[in-house]
Length: 87
Image 1 (cartoon, one colour):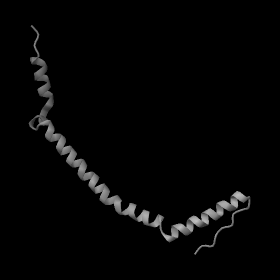
Image 2 (tube, one colour):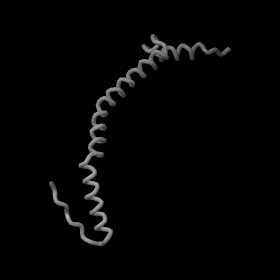
Image 3 (cartoon, rainbow, N blue to C red):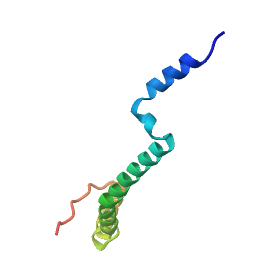
Image 4 (cartoon, rainbow, N blue to C red):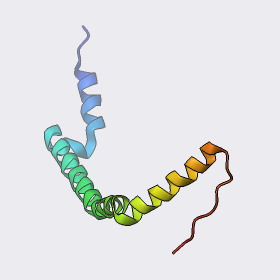
């Protein structure tokens, strides 16, 4: 008669030290670790994103966009673009 006893013994031997904790606890620990990583990622990148947002919507950005638009209009008319004076 065939039984599952050898299979059960092999499976329990393969589990090793992780057998001491339930699987749910390991999942919670992994999730908590990932949550901390994401939190630090947001703290690190957040100020940079805010700075880029402020730079891209300020007066300097609007003036740069106007100069670029003027250059594109010259190219569309067929004229050679002239470099703008830098401040």
